[in-house]
Image (cartoon, rainbow, N blue to C red; front, side, top):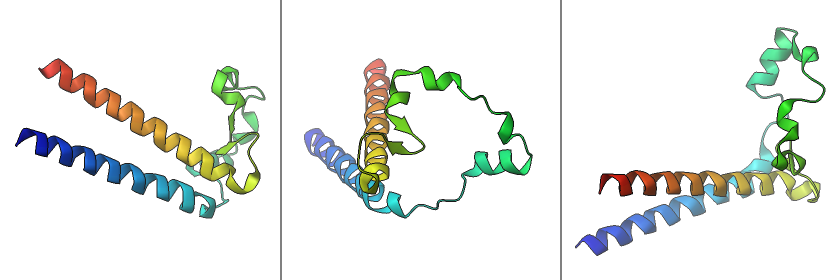
Length: 107
């Protein structure tokens, strides 16, 4: 009985991952080009121009690959979708890893 429950859990996780990837791949290009919430507030409160020209986060290794919800070196038509898929897979992997660590500590 326990194997059946485990199999159902993996089936559910797989279906969730496929759904999330489909959303990231097919709906990400349709996202609004308007500024996101933080950018909008910075513009409204007029402190956007005080941002650092070279923020500390730009020194991180992955900052050379990702910029403004796009992936550098990938054609513009699929860049946003690629970034969404990579982000989805990273979040899924981190969540799955964290769940495994938590369940291993309980046993």
